[in-house]
Structures are given as structure tokens and as C-alpha cells.
Image 1 (tube, one colour):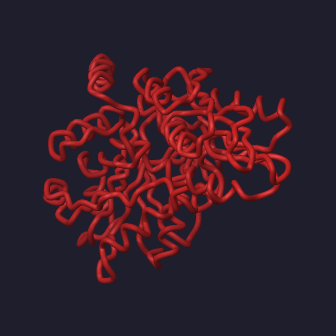
Image 2 (image 1 turned 135 degrees about the vertical axis):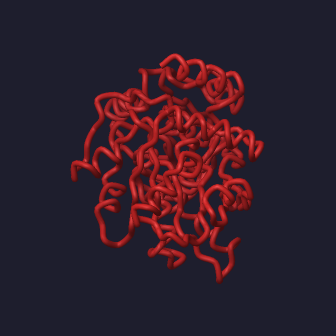
Length: 356
């Protein structure tokens, strides 16, 4: 088996974005991962770490193993397989970008997977999951609905549960992208800020861990969400974890109703500065279209939320408010992924948002 499932993604300087914000902008191109997003880092690392342990638990988008050393579970599909990867039985997990990563990892391991996804998942993504050899089960409208089905299966199978974004091994896997960025930038360059999008908070936790690992805890994180998928921002505003009533944003991959506890704790900590910001779906879509025009790369709405920090003037506003320095060191932008978008889906989004 390979040392890891993810690749060291390119770190590209964007001349166009640098001109917009008045400082150098570096793009960490996680959309170029084999599964299309950063998710493969955490899920791949989780699977590799747990495959040799002896007590079982389930990940809704990661890996689990069950019982003795002779059997494991992957709830990526939840998959039961023997220690020599001879397949015995397959089970289940919620999909989207996590599902794409899970399907890729299980295919590489030679293990069958059943991916549980909500009905909001684009047809093109469903097809790509099937192309990876996964069995696809559609449950509910948003991620939380699919996750509830995974939890039901956990209960009926008598297993423990691990979230696709709320587990230390997931965060450790995601932290590798910061280590890669630091190595690419070299010892004499430190970002003025890291720009990311937030759904359930797994990437945020991984980035914080990565910043700790490379000694960059003085670098602020600008955590971007869209209106209607803003569970972190709602929690930060109230000072407690808030569960959204529904996901109304078109950025469905940010569609967790509740942010993970660790991400919220980081947002309240004096250990690191996390600036929570929200943009509209139209701003996120504008960012997607502008990025396509300027960088010739198509990304999904969840990624557009991050890019909107530059394209919609959020960075400039934060500088004017004194929350980011007026003379800003280079920006590190995590281009989180684009597996849930194609030209047809982009046209559908444009039509939806034009009529709102």
C-alpha cells in the first residue's frame, strides 16, 4: 500500500488575486487531489492508522474497525473486511467530498464501499462515486440526514461512531497541507493569514493543528461560510454551539447544521485568532466564476466561499477594521476542492441564484 493516499498539491502564486488584495496570494490547490478535495488527507490517514488496531469504531466518512485484529470496519461505506483485505461484507457512510475520498481509498485498498449521500448531491457526483466502484444509497436532503442513517446503522450493528470531520486522526491528516505549504514557502516566508471554508469544522481543526506543528500559531485564520450554511458563525455570535434549523445555502458541501466542538473551542480560544466571516451564495458564485476566468480552474460553491474573501472585499474590510494588518504578509488560500461541480451544475446554480 502507498505511504499515503493524498498527493502533495501545488502551491501556486496568483498574480490576479495578488493584484486585488495588494499582497502576494498563494493558492494551495487541494482540488487537484485524486478524489477532488482535501478530504482524502483526513480519511486516508484515518484508514491507515486504524487498520492495525484492535478495537472497533465507525466513521461516517472515514474508517472503522470492529472486534478483533482479524476484522475491520470502514464506514466509508462501512466496510467489514479481513486483516488481509479479503472482503467479507460492506456497510455504509455519508458522501459528498468525503464520500468521494472514501470511495477512492476503499478502491485502492481493494475493499467494497456503500456511500450514503443526501438528495442534494449532484447527479455527476453520484456517477463519479459509482465509477470508483462504490454502491450509492441516497437518504434525506442534507448531510445531517445521511449522517442520521449512518447513526441508525451504527445502532443496529452495535458499533461506535466517528464523524467524517470530528476526529483527531481526521484533523491530523488534514494538517499535512500546512506542512506542505510551509515547506514550499521556505523558512523565510510566513503567511499573513490563512483563508479557508468551514462546514463541520474538520478542515479548520486540521489547519490549526498544522499551524501548531510548523510554529505559525500567530497566523490568523479567516474562516468563511455562506449564509444558510453558517453554523460556526452563528455559534461564534451567540458564544455557544448552535444547530441550524436547515441548510438553505446552495453551498451544500458546507451543509453541516452543527460545527464540531473542537472547532468552536478554537474559535473561542486565545491560542489562535480565528476570524469568522459569512458571504452570500451570490458572492460565492461570483467568486467561482471569477476564479474560473482568472485561474482557469472550476471549483464548487464551498470553495467559492473562501475565494470570496478576496473577490468580495472581505480581506480589505478586515484590514480597514484593524482585524488584519494594513501591510499584510502573503495570503495562503486553501482551494479546498471542486468535485461537486461541472459546467452543467454551474449553469443550474447561476439560474437558481438569478431568480432569487
